[in-house]
Length: 90
Image 1 (cartoon, one colour):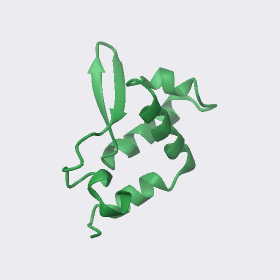
Image 2: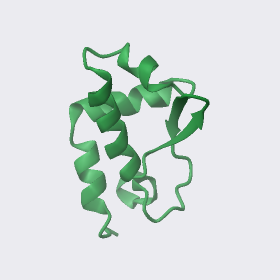
Image 3: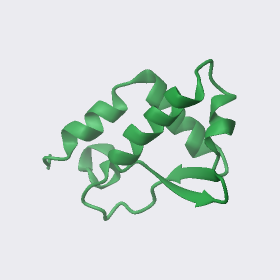
């Protein structure tokens, strides 16, 4: 069933760069923004923007370690504000 949160997820997943960032986060071991930037020909603020969109969609989570922020796939599909809880993504 589609929810009012679905447009946020669809928007987040509709961008090729965000899909590549999501794949990088998925394949990395909680990469930092700096580690993700090295895989792209984009600047850090651009990657940070895409990570923020993915966070708002409920696809990635972040945790601060000292001065670095590490990103990982959000692993709580029960969260109703997460794309991962959508039956379309299953």
